[in-house]
Length: 248
Image (cartoon, rainbow, N blue to C red):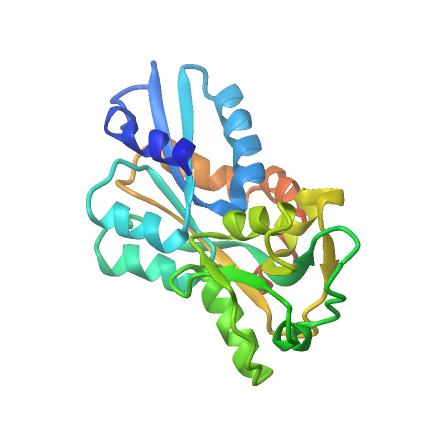
């Protein structure tokens, strides 16, 4: 979190300039987009000489609130529509939000699954310590919905600010399980084991918009939704939003 804080402190210097020389494009993105948006930022820089893309990562709702409060930013990508509505209702969004990816919630455990977690029901078992995101974050809201559907009485031992923090708890062996997105489980590789939730409704649709309406911001949104951008997302484990129909 110290790294993110340092990045946020630099934001006042990172606004878009007036031309294509030595410009900075600031992208506010859900923590679960870390790998994909870092890769897309490099692609964008290669295609726009003189432009530096700064990707600020964190909880979708927090980033949306910061955008409404006037924090510098040119693009906002959230992990659900609820967080995006914060930016829209607050007048920060300058483009109708567009869906660009779908993700699913899964359970991750440390290697070997020492607590023998087999599904959501296991989270309520005595002695099983597990983590999830805070309810204000998309991953936490989705977790709460899934647990309500299962009428589970499971209570987490900790609620983290975003999905990366939950994953870190599991990787460090501080909890027996955590509810994270499938893409984060895939990115963690052998550091975790994945257990399915057994809930078909455990999915969320990501949305993206521009903040301020600059041409560069619109170009970045187009890259994310382009076949090239979608391929990067698919490789990371994201699916196409159902509204795309044909997967593009």
